[in-house]
Image (cartoon, rainbow over all chains, first blue to last red; front, side):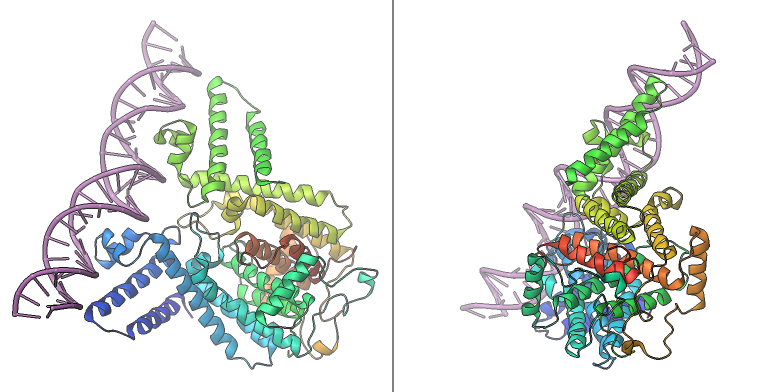
Length: 267
Length: 267
DNA sequence: AATTTTAGAGAGCACCGCTCTCTAATTCAC
DNA sequence: GTGAATTAGAGAGCGGTGCTCTCTAAAATT
């Protein structure tokens, strides 16, 4: 899916979404203007990046004087928050759709689908991806009450996959299962540190899951690694001509990660 | 090491660096002003972030009218490039120092030292880290001729560690060494795809190394995973109160990565 | 000593976020 | 239907930004 196509899908979704309940003509007009602002904002974000998002430019595109947009949006930061939530949901939708196409018992398949969906979305929506996972916009911190929900959709999906594999009895490789000569002795593979163990316990109770510390640690690492690899590609850390088939590289990385995280059940 | 301390070390280094060859008094003054601009820029970067870096503010701090700084720096982007190179070298110095403290044959120890050094530097220099590994500043792309050198110091160090472990005969876990029942059959563990194989071959010849495709793929993944984990922590993706001892979490992740990348020789 | 180079000042241009006031249109209450 | 209240938008203005241009004064060169 191309960048343009993905954005168009989002636009259509936004339109349909907000057009539902329309009472008075004024409210209808307001919602429509609101949608248009979001749409223009999305376009500006894609072209000029988060730091280059300008309310004045949005106003120009809207065909309105700059102060008028403040009737709809309190500040530039509020527009940024709207676009942030919007982007999180767009990514979440893409990931959900991709993962749900794979049978529930095919954990590694679902894991790979998740990873590929993240990468595809990120490459198609580089500026939005940068807004979500890049350097934080200086002087702006997202209001947690609005962003944590949409912002945790991907990790929630990943947790579901990991927990599914865990309860199915699939375990990560590593020292217990790996070559013995490299890990003789008293090494404690189970996660060390009281604080960390407590944190994992809190995660288990919060998410209602049973995966042990080792599985959780590897899951968190897989999560971070996926976004690390995607960020490297999107943000250009690999250099211009190092990898000519980054999709293939990413697939290999997903394979390794699936085994590392202990979800290589069905292959 | 605290943030302030690290920056102070950098400042001192810059001073010493550029103070060396001083011919005429005018040149001496010019170098000194240049240093001061870099120093102020670094401070502004730390406080206001890359997008908030303002030449006018630098001029104010320098005690000079805004147009005057253009005698020293062609544009805001050029100052950004200077700070970019500066930051890459600061990170490179930190990593080199940390890794070189560990015996050359202790590959996993050196790997862990590299990871910890990256994380420590990133946490101490969040804005500079964001400049290097966050979303690209919109409308600015770094001139490759100035930045690729300093920008590849960390991966160069990592390549050295990986190749050392490889030539020492240490191999990654995974299907050949891992549990057999999960990977029966005809799976090709060696990296698939002609393009990817060619890229790895190019990497071998460019870096003068011998590690096979599997080792290279895992090395690249380890590289991306380290920065993914650090970015998650620095950019706040984990949330505020999920992990109370992130250093311990990161150490566990480094352990897993070291085994994944096949450098768990001496433990 | 005369000339050239250079650092800095200052004004100005177009942009930015945001606030304030004013006008005109729409909606609501009666 | 008419008067009151609400609302959308216009416009001016504040202080900030990057950057260019011209001018002055000091320093270095000849």
